Image 1 (cartoon, one colour):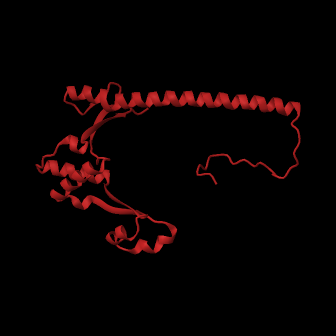
Image 2: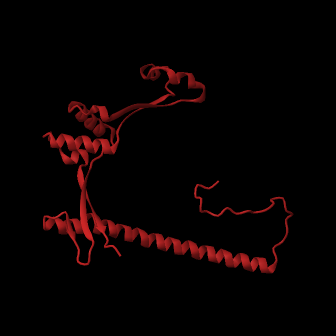
Image 3: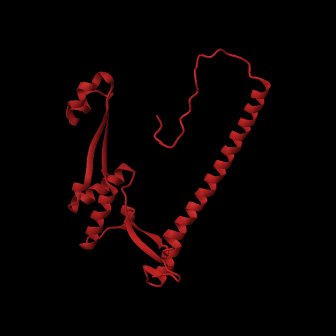
Length: 196
């Protein structure tokens, strides 16, 4: 069953029909349909390429060019002639490093600054079928049980919680290096169109 409710479901009929040769008309139709399919695939690829370029341009206009113009005038929004508004919102962003050592530095920083509660601390184990009973043992015991059991430590923080915690910390006067957190502010433009 398709997840897309609008997608047409085709009925192919019976599968146990006897094998036969395609007629000349059927072969011509098959050739025309194969040609049509390749043309459609090419057109869609072209449209997707154009769409990606337009999305990138929209992102640059919305997240950089308009915010920079308004920033130069020390504005966050402006009304347009003929109605409508241009508004720029500022949304802070931060993230954990992918490299385990650097990520651990960030986790320790959160712990030192009483924000460790937002860290999801997990150990992920991969077990063979015959080792299912071992899944209930404590992690320390698992490390010595079998070299075939792979244990992976994982530390993660939901991005929204990380941003909120760092924002509160900064507002409370806790200094941190923006690069350490990949901290930046995303500025996004919203155009409020005039009513018709």
